[in-house]
Length: 350
Image 1 (tube, rainbow, N blue to C red):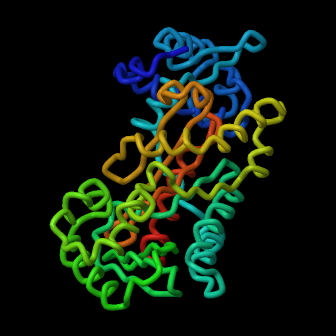
Image 2 (cartoon, rainbow, N blue to C red):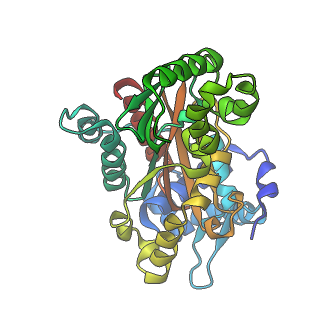
């Protein structure tokens, strides 16, 4: 298997090599059948003889851009071949209007509450892409703290509402000692808002105890709730990220998953959300906000047979992720357009 570090080196290919490599990858993405020289000569506009194409294919195989199976004379792309295609040869394929309308309808539907939007988008994205689709909720821990509210629900229960500047909020219910007066709660709220304003939730989580060290003892009864539950109140979602997953049925239409073991493997992978979260959080983002990781580039062994495409969306000063996981033979050109559009509409509408 090609090692991930080997993918960083790419030879400069000739024009003829680029044309043939591009045709092979595009045809293989479409058909899932190894591509032979006679097929390329007859079915494309390359205008070269099968013998000439065969020689070029042999050179590309020597450079590890192509390989062949034991049962066919045709070639299939390697991880390195896909990487060269994505970096140097690919042109994005625009979405058709119907696809845009299906994705937009979930964002604009007034009957869908905000938290359900991510679930619905993952469902439609899986349906359109026929890959495993993943939508994460925005990472509130990146957001700038705006204010805290403590709402007294009973003598022993309070509702904590943490608001950030992007307009998003986190609400949690806590038990408190009886006898804490409204005045003490209001004082504690005022002190916390003064001390925590302008910080990210992650900064608050990491420095909270130090920041409240000098607070007078009469406020510490309320603050004990925060001291004891700091990880929960200012949780870093990168450790416990909420993911919505779609496409688990649609991906069965891909030839790679005709084997039920392959299907079982990818479903088990999506069930292990800690692996998916770790991968998404560590994928480098290009200047367009897109990340693509192919086969051996994925450090986790369970992902070596798959590719992942990920895009960031923004809601104010916080970010989330939209991603697709599928066979290395996925239609990168179309999937990049689909993720770009999905991220754009979430950014603009949510």
